[in-house]
Image 1 (cartoon, rainbow, N blue to C red):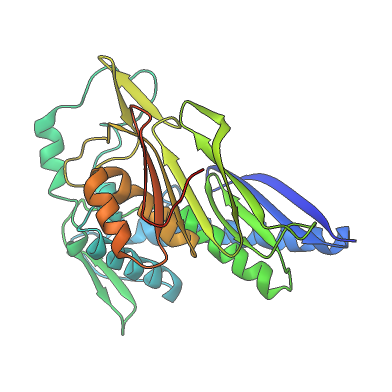
Image 2 (spheres, helix red, strand yellow):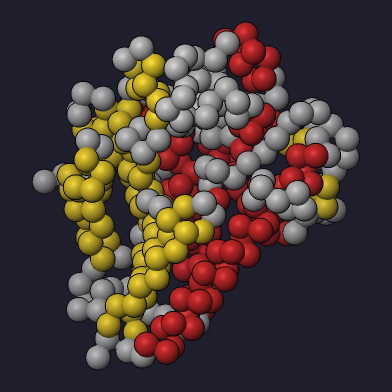
Length: 308
């Protein structure tokens, strides 16, 4: 008889939950161990918290020399730049150039950072200054002080890689949930599609809507997760790479598409661009949908979403 087996674990600094369908607890445990190991492996490649990670090697050689990286890291950077092009730079992995001291989003933060200092730092944020050499498999950041980071795409990539590994191991159904960036395949143990709740921005534990999906990915992000309030205005933890300032006015973004890496990456530009331009962009891209909720609780779905 088919059952669902779950593993909840903190990985990549986030709460992950992996669910798979199977009929044998020992096999399921082995599959879950393998998925966790795969996410750990990706974390070691992408983290900025380990001196010897490939991301840190690229950053520490900014303005100095190209750095040879694994083909996998090269591919992720290449795809990130493609998303930057599609989103007119509203997604930009070189956002790491904005000093974390400006925006730490803890309760001790009581005033906005100095605008002139942010403007100075913004000179380091431009994906067009990431130089790739596909033959040598190297990455070069043109300006000293430039930094890349995978905060906007890494969780989705890890979820997608864990799913691919589980499928390769013969797991017919499951969900990999990387703290709100999730990917699904197959069906629940009872044969029904996976039911995904979309968080209510005013109460993250209570979904405002449900979706039945299979072989799809969903990424949700919002100002309800991590934010500061300064002089009565709420600022989301999402930073606009063009201004260096956090996003305000949007409570929640949900992206639906077939791939968790893309869903994760698109959540950032959609939350930054403004509702009109964001919906226009999403409606131009095949197999991509979104639901935006603003600060006044108005709901803006893309053209193929029909909310009940």
